[in-house]
Length: 266
Image 1 (tube, helix red, strand yellow):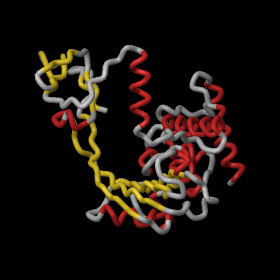
Image 2 (cartoon, one colour):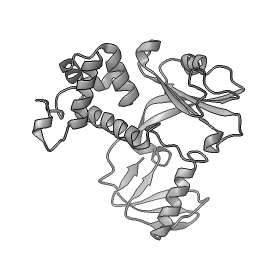
Image 3 (tube, helix red, strand yellow):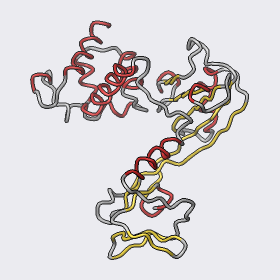
């Protein structure tokens, strides 16, 4: 299995979209990923690992979709791991809230303007195209608007829900060599589900909690009427918790691409 897996990774690493000699006879834009796996005779366990731990697919729908996306995902993972050595993932100091702050600082350099603590009263449209945003009687004119689904209830549809539990711990995750951060993925087949369960762990080394404390974020796609119980396999892995906070959030998708009315839903 190791030899077969090595051949597969060599194919992925050598693949170049502009060089047909590296395609191994595959048209990745049309052939489903399951056929690529079959070509290399990879076992189900290896396919599970590659598809969920490397390509980060949440379910097995990708197996019947064009292979190009999965190959690109695997290359990105491998390239990131090679670049950063210990992990392919980057996490901002002080938590995810530092991402919008970094964007704000960079945007200011290019003369971006920020209007903070301003409620959005109306998305102003003319002839079916957005022309501005109205707030407290003032209108900021624009060529297009980018916003989350809460601003465009008539342009989105709910496609599911995600359950998340944030856990405060006083110990590292067992069997991780006392690592101060980690990501654990439980493939859906291993817990009798249709989608994976994710465990993301961060600690004081990221300046997100006090020294000696850890934060574990558990999440998965809701599949039953008891969302909280769906995270039981993850809770078993992380061990004793000091506090837990659970929420269920809807997943929205835009009804169109926003090209016509210039309203782009993030």
